[in-house]
Image (cartoon, rainbow, N blue to C red; front, top):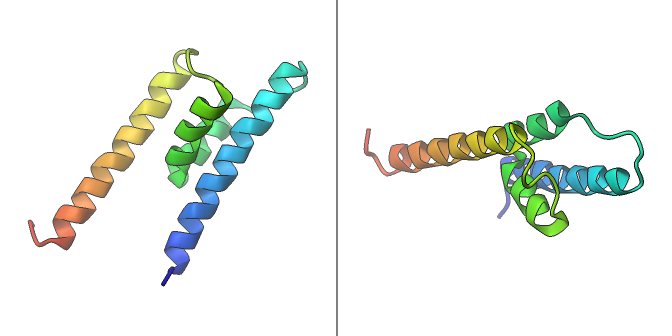
Length: 93
């Protein structure tokens, strides 16, 4: 059974994925773009999987530095928090 937390996590990732796609479409059309801060903020609040998936699917923001470095740090932070959560859950602390 899904909890509200899992549904919120899935929603943030889906929204982040769509936001990256929207920004890519606007980049192609040479229209006003989504600020990088907003893309990174969505990744930071839980959408890092959606952001990385969108990078691959849309081939968007894959080489632009320091954006890539910042997104990778956010993903690393999320992986570290996930590892700590699992360790805590299995009684390692």
